[in-house]
Structure formats: structure tokens, C-alpha cells
Amino acid sequence: MAGTPSRPPVLLTLVFAMICVMSAVALIYTKHEARSQFVELERLTAERDELNIEWGQLQIEQSTWATHARIEQVAADELSLLRPKTAEIYVIERQ
Image 1 (cartoon, rainbow, N blue to C red):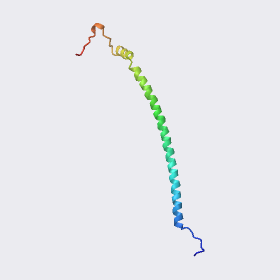
Image 2 (image 1 turned 135 degrees about the horizontal axis):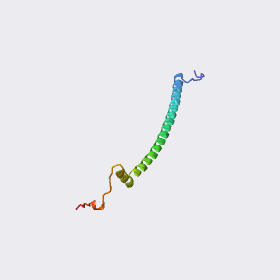
Image 3 (image 1 turned 60 degrees about the horizontal axis):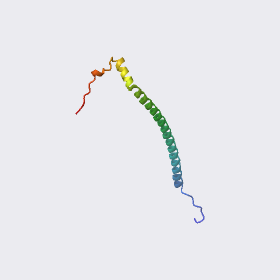
């Protein structure tokens, strides 16, 4: 048996082949998951930007509705309230 070439065991070759296939499948799965997560991140980033814009618009709208002139106008027009005369205003001081 000194002159016969040695053959690698078939079982060892199959194990290495299975490890290579499993490694390739794991690589494909990982790349797919990374791409899916990146797409989700981009979608959420765009949604966040839209919500920030809407929040800014709502803050501007709130400040517009809360101006003293607007409140006074609503009080006069819808509630029929009038500003008291100076003689009707009493200042109470704390001691």
C-alpha cells in the first residue's frame, strides 16, 4: 500500500460541502435581512421627517389660535363678553 495514492474520505468531503452550502445560504439570508432592515430604516426616517414637518405646522397653528387678539375676538363675537371698564377692575394684592 505504499504506492497507492490516498483518497480523502467521502464522508469528510460531504461534510465540507455541506458546510460550504450552509455558509452560502447564511450569507444570502444575512444580506437579504440587511437590505430589508435598511429599507425599513429609510421608510421610518421619511415618516419621521413628515411627522416633524406636521408638528412644526401644528405649533404654528396653535400659536396663531392662542394670540391675545384671537382670544379677545372669540370672547366678544361668540360669547358676547366685553372688556371691563377701568373703574370695574379691582387689583387684589397679597401680603
